[in-house]
Amino acid sequence: MAGKDYYKILEVSKSSSPDEIKKSYRKLALKYHPDRNKDDKTAEAKFKEVSEAYAVLSDPEKKKQYDMFGAEGFQNKFSQEDIFRGFDFGSIFNEFGFSGGGRGQNIFSQIFGGMAGQGQHHYHSGGSPFGSSHGGFQNYARPMRGQNLIYELQLSLEELSEYTTKIISYQIDGRQEKVSVKVPAGIPEGQKLRLHGKGQAGSHGGPPGDLYVQIRVLDHPVFRKENDNLYLKKQINFSESVLGTEIEITTIDQKVLKLKIPPGTQNNAKFRLKGYGLPHMKGGGRGDAYAEISIAVPKKLNKKQRQIVKSLSEAGL
Image 1 (cartoon, rainbow, N blue to C red):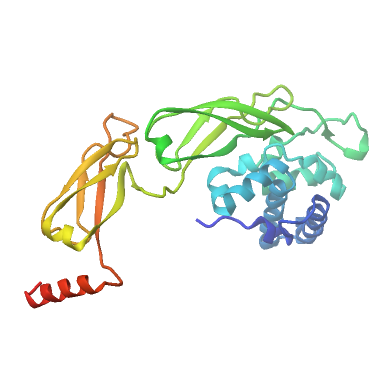
Image 2 (cartoon, rainbow, N blue to C red; image 1 turned 90 degrees about the vertical axis):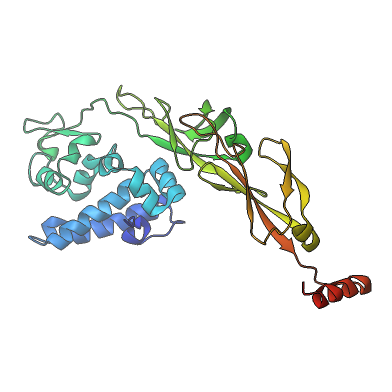
């Protein structure tokens, strides 16, 4: 499912400043607000959409995650509850001058399905310590869990071939954090390792979120990875393919193997090196390595070589 382009929804660009983002949101929220568009479900949907976009782009950490993973990746990783967690619905009441216990509260509870209570404010029908200007709005906090964070960890095939420990560094609340991550051998591309309590700090005494370390496998100059199997290309001469030869293969863990190439080997032939691929993360054992053979055809021949090839042609080869 395609993700939502929050920049397009808010009619801003990636380079827009926080003030420009806020200004555009105010304009669109006023345009589509339900009080100005009675019984217009389309406007109500647009109001919700621009509010969702603003909840992400006005939050530096959420915006960073959105820019890092793209619209679709962000949508897959963050629920609507995650998006609106910590979003100050009370400030929206102030923007439009609504009273907390009346029409304003109903708008947000109807449109956002009660998520207004998950922000920084609660609402009740009693009196307000701020007097009648805010009606039944009371500013008091409840413990809230911090937001989860995602860190992309890039690994080489050599690092995947054995159990390893990585020290990662990431920004959180304006400070640099370092944490040690134990990475199992053979971990698949895209898998996430959860570090409990290493995410965004909670508010008002709430617990911190988690840090998810997502694995990304780097391209390798020699090997191509398919699941736990590894493929490498080896080139031999025409004469070696006809008469047979022996070549050396260096495995991902730097072992040097001798591979016999039988006479009559064809172009694109594959030779299996059992157990020399990547470790299986579960169940033990390893995948296989495959040598893919290509036959070199020279672009230029000297006089002697030309005569030999010509005699082979005359002999039916």
